[in-house]
Image 1 (cartoon, rainbow over the protein chains, first blue to last red):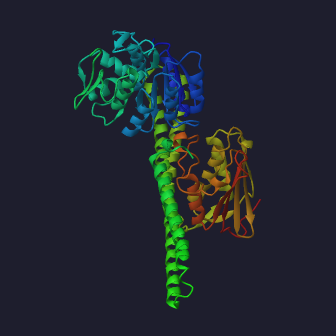
Image 2 (image 1 turned 60 degrees about the vertical axis):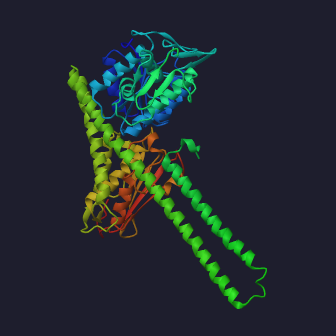
Length: 236
Length: 314
């Protein structure tokens, strides 16, 4: 899947955009550049064939990258987003991830690392979708999760998971009953150091509980284990 | 105004300060007026001492109101400066990191891939442009610290007409512009007393600005003319994006940039025009900006004293 994947580069700095495009095309991907945030959102929403990956800058004319990511997720578009930006403080990273980005790379970056992240995101998406070993459909209580479509079916209602939500859920599904620490989740799902100070994991657990219809005050499936991490019970 | 949930903490705190300040002002005005009303019914036949007390009481409250207004204005200024400084940090971070990121990307590409000579040459040219951008940002930051409003200490004769023509040529080359995109009219020679380095920076910043804000069609007219016997006026007129009256009042302030930095549409640090103003003041001159409105171009006028008698020719 990775080779030939369609990638949209949203970057207003021409030199960077062209350099990234040149390298992605050299790796066999099909890349397109848009320099304006609002136009990129329009293109991503309207495109007849969804993009496989979005490389998104933060400081953009038209609409900033955080808003593009947020709006894209609000509209149900789940294309993986790799955010590239000169803003590299931990709070910027968390802000980007919470807005809907799936990975974050501060500028200036190493070309090898960048290409590895691109490959990693495309692989992660395939893994979450069940192309890699692991179950494609899983029943958690009265919800059925389909990792091929990122859909959760519960009481006749369908909700859709983002790539990060699906990746986190898949990690928990592959380790049912085991306590997984916050650090392990940060490393495996977010590609962040285990000791990064962030509420991102807690926020995503809340979002997953909402998808699964799990009562946040008295969860039956997605349990918080104090000072240890989280534990998923498929059918308690 | 954006809904509260979309505002940054800095914006939120600005609105809290404004609300508190305005409430205090309104309260003290209400107190002044209300107190008069409360005092009047029994006061008509009261002793003269009561009127004296009234007078000083009112005076005190008026002073209180004045003080509150002053605090409110100072606070607002402080918040604006903080906003501009935060924008500046973002702008400089972006202006420094972007060319560095580009240089690193092209360097990595050249190292990692076997490329034809023609491609390599194109990449070298791109890297050269990135280096120039980096150099210009560093110079702007250093110049902002170097040129202050203090008068030039050791003014020397500067051939301004030649200096302007040279800067026009440099701007054309840097931006790969045809000759008619930036035209010069004015005398062949004109000497002013001043600091050549400062004047060069100021003129170059005005010309760069005109190109940067010209949009698609670059048509800049640079003119130099004598005003009276000892003053010279440099005018830079573009037909670009122009600006509103509200922006005109602030564009020479340090760190000022139009719009939120996260939605930046043009390169820059918000120091260019501030440096022009500092250089103008240092020469006991002035700089002004005019614009008929957005999309209708702008005119920047730099006026300098100290023209050497008999130095104007052509």
